Image (cartoon, rainbow, N blue to C red; front, side):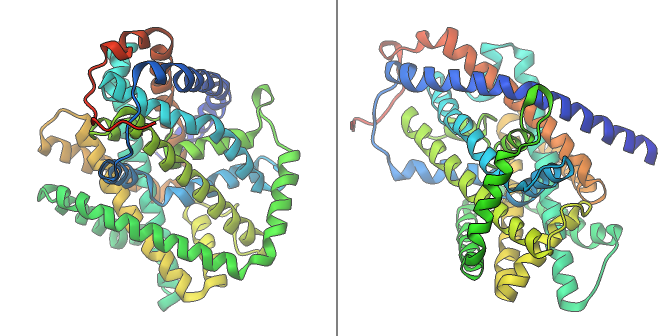
Amino acid sequence: MENLILEIEELLRIISNIAWPVFIPFLILVGIYVSVQVIFNIRHLTTERSKLNFKYIIPQTSVTLGAMVGTGTIIGFLGALSKLSISGQIYVEAVAIWALIGSIVLIPISYCETLIAKIVNLSPREYIGKFISKNAGEMYVLSLIFLYVFAIGGVQFTGIDAIMITALDKVSNIELSPIQRYIYIVIPIIGIVSIVIFNKREKIFIKSMIGMILVAIAFYFVFFGLFTLKTAHYIPTFIERMIVGFKNPTSILFGIPLGLIFGMQRVIQIAEPGLGTLAMAASKSEASPRVAGFISLTLTMTLVVVSIIVTSYIASYGMNEGTISLSAKGVYKLVSYFETVISVTGNFGFMILFIFIVLSGMTTLLGGYFLLNNILDNSKYKNNIIYIILVFMGSVLAIFKFDMIFNILDLLLLISIGLNISALAMFAEFEWSKYKIRDYDFKISNNKVS
């Protein structure tokens, strides 16, 4: 059985290593085409200008952030740094520059997909089914559910597991085995989540999610500000390493830099441009197309910049000081990241990070449940069972086969964004003229502004 699992893990790694270098040129070219066509042409002919109303921002951003802000912002980027290091990249900090370059293509897509969803008044599942095929729409739903509930949900357990390992070691020098951690840490979390959803308390939780997310993000900014103040002398070294690494890239198929591939993967995982979740959240709001698109654009830019700068800087400092080991297996990469935080900011910084990891992990887990209920037309009870099964499976891999769940996550990212971006391209090329402003009956406020 163990050999079979190892063979599957290796197969997934090989498929991912081949598929992404082939997919990246397609994503860049189609992304640029869609963005240029929508922003400079379609937007003016199918939508009207309208005021940015604060009442639209809260619902859209709270639901979206619930699925986006999680420990993946740290784990994902550490994974990218680790992969680059294994591939022989000099100064892996260069992935931050590559991620920002990839964001030039990806961030406008977040605006375009939201705008298009509002123009056609369809969810991603519906417009993929309409512009490509019904089977493509169903495949998109399946890949997105597995991505968010199984893969990204599973990754949250890795973050909580790592922070608990660090806390137990720091407080009482207790070291638990993987099976003990699963029993005493993971199962209670699954139990709490199960109680919330089976008692139909998810609506109450989602309302309180807004405050939880704001608190988590505020704590994270405080923590990073403290870390930066105490390590200000290292900033020039960090910048120099990024530039040197960027000038000496390690390439793969077709000469595509690995840093660009890993950087774009993590941007998609962290901020979700092109996955359709931003469009899905916007389709449930009453905001006009341009307002909804602007909210998605701002959200994506903020998450990308914060996650890239914060994680890459702390990781770079830890590697320089010898407190972070990118060669460590699974969860212990993240543990070494936390130890770096403690070495600089002490107990205060660690407590802030602890709060962030736990709050963001829980909001991401329940944000995934909210997403599942929005795209599956089953009874609540059936959706609850599906959710618990997927979370359970993801948690097992996260604790016992961490690298495997990340390979699965990367493949699910590719499938989801590939289907969504293809549908957006079909709209931009063939369908948009059906939604010109004279035929457009989207209800917006009478308040129009330039």
